[in-house]
Length: 126
Image (cartoon, rainbow, N blue to C red; front, side, top):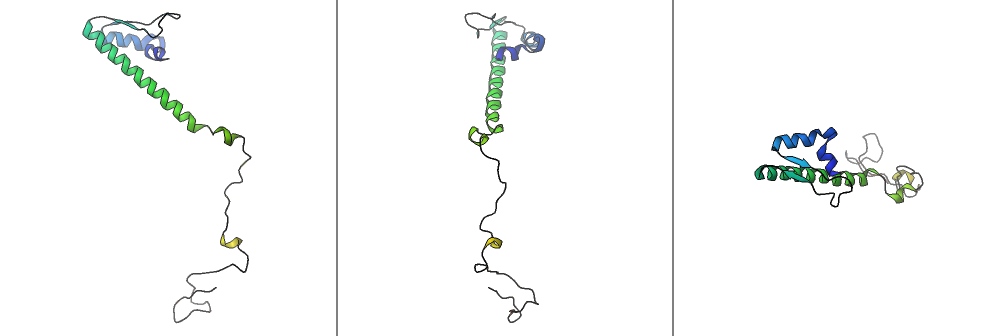
């Protein structure tokens, strides 16, 4: 996967690297004993720079793969939730309007026209 990304579409990316660093880069043939062995030839300082560049590209690619795989975990629902029955949506429990009439209590400021207002201040009504 890394080789294909470094080589690029129609080999343009690898040719650009070879031109930039003035090196020759050869990837192993399919079925080679070591499929990860990439050969870089040229002047020693150019070879070192090209290898560093290729290793950086590999590191970036592998980081992208890890990030992508980690993101996929969050994008699909967990297996135990897939088999669950459809959700009933948002449910309100123990709301004041669901209490029985003997449990209802109203508290708060009362408007001036409500009986039970004492001394110009709003009072509590139970």
